[in-house]
Length: 228
Image (cartoon, rainbow, N blue to C red; front, side):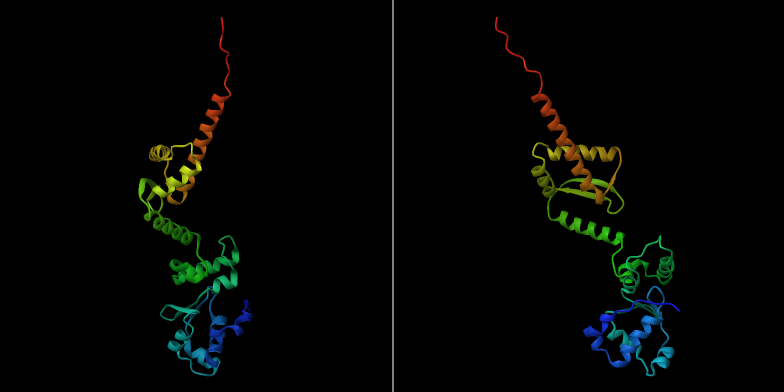
């Protein structure tokens, strides 16, 4: 017999208080009868038989709209079921393999945050890239770098150059960025996600190199003026 975690705080939730008695029982029914990915194959006759009352499926979807989503005819997904039962899934964990297989089977992989209850790494990266694009749109673009992956371009803005000018006062930031652009085009493209880190490292190395050259000049041999 399979066992599952249960939420003992459910009895304190207002949405659960508001459910008619038969729908409270129905909620427990679908939580127990869904598969390991949180998907219940609708069987109204069986639900009515065990609960002892007729359940209106349309009404149930309305009452449980924040807890359940119909993902296909006859298929209901319990939102955040996976996160509650397993935490963050891992493909290296043998018991999780069956869950991944069902996510693929039910076609909910494309909306992983709904099924898993948390954002995947890919979704987090895409969201961060969108935020970066929005931030970059707010300031003037000075240079555009080709990148690997999505998006295909990364824009160096006036705001970013200004920030690096403050951090590296001895460096001609824009000139160094032009050198970095030439290097990227001739050698290896970076991802848009990694461009800021790449350029920041470039500025740091340039700054250290200039400081080292200045120290060598300052500590060079001193000659006394010959007086005849």
